[in-house]
Image 1 (spheres, rainbow, N blue to C red):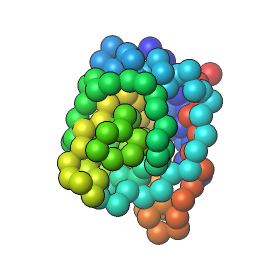
Image 2 (cartoon, rainbow, N blue to C red):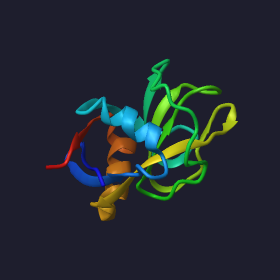
Image 3 (cartoon, rainbow, N blue to C red):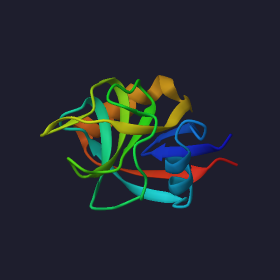
Length: 138
């Protein structure tokens, strides 16, 4: 099982890759590591933050996809109806865009630090974009 360390501003989480259920997404994302971006608050999905990726392609299809991720179930949306993105839910979430409901590949699950997900979400909501990094945990 592959474990990642995710850092969002002052918060650090560990997450397991869902390699059995989303093998293509996990393999493609792992090839990008270490991965750094900016994370902002979601506009339509409820209590979630997201990493907008525009036309970026990870060259994966749908696998282990859902519209109703639980807090800490991180999704990769491969694009199509909306831009490519990574969704990081911290509370009640229905994955959507201005065109309506979407489904994304559940490829990471936060295992440690879950008790601070809401704090992270509120920080991003009220204070704006934050740096986020994904790295292999040592």
